[in-house]
Amino acid sequence: MSNAAAEIPTAGTTEARTVAAAGPRDLSAYKEEQIAGGDLAAAAYLLLWAIIGAYLWRTARRQAVAESALRALEGRLDAEFARAAAQAGRGDAAAAERAP
Amino acid sequence: MTLPNPPSPRPVAAPLGLSLAIVVAIGLVEAALAHIAFATPPDIALGVVQKIFYFHVASAFAMLLFLVLGAGLSAIDLVAPSDRADAGARGALEVGALFGAILLVTGPLWARKSWGTWWTFEPRLTLSLLVELLALAVLMLRGLSSDAQLGRRAGAAMAVMAAPISLLIHLAVKLWGGNHPSVLQGGGVQSAAMRISFWLAVAGVLTLASALLALRYQQLRLDQRHRELELTFAAWQLRRTRTAGESS
Image (cartoon, rainbow over all chains, first blue to last red; front, top):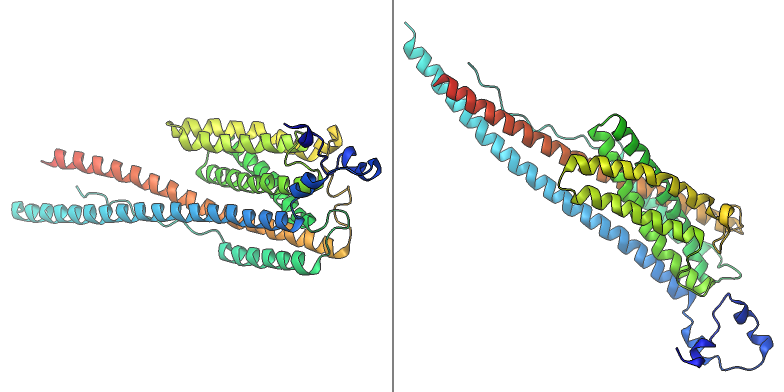
């Protein structure tokens, strides 16, 4: 860090509050470093919605995966149910043939 | 012998009022944003950047509330294991961590202007970071554990242990001081318009967090129901194979 940078006071410190009393100093670097409060507030609200949006997007993706898995299971259940019903039907026919 | 029917996929009922909660949350958040932007004067000392305050503090409330709720449900799940408590705990911890992330992102943006630094390791900030990292650790432990039951119980125990630290965030300013103001006792809201914005933001964020929890809870219950059905189906197939073997 250069000497010039080390002398830059930051807002809220004792040095920053006493700058005016200390007399003329080169504050160009300090002024350039300042970020407008409106920009910070806008960034905060944008990031807030970005985080919530990302969570909602992830939740929607998880929901789609869960629904897809349930649909696949439903298809397998339907197939098994049909196979079981067919087997039961064959069993009834065989029993009827064996009956006196 | 008649074979039993395959298991039927019983749908998981949506939590009562989920759609209503989402609509109310959006309405309250929009009202809060409009009030903050157009009806609330900027702070005399800090200027426009103080408008971060409303959603920053509301996010802190949501973080604390939902992490403590998650810890409470984790304790219930440890004492009397149930899928409902597990889904509720996991959802609450996720929502708490979500608003913790918002808190830790919006805080430094405000601090840069008011304190002149993005971050300082003062008690309230450090504890908030610690609790957020603990919440993320619990969620990672649950998500990445190869033994789901072990991950569930270890995560629940960790969440219960982290709960007192969450409460310490609230007391940090009183106990150890530091730069961070005590919001409700420290004069964070100076005018009637600011108070309206503040409570609108708190109501909006808490309703939004509740709606997100209800959404995530419903989804976790759907996952649990899916796993339950897969197991029942596998057991049914095994029984059917055995029955077919016995009859032939």
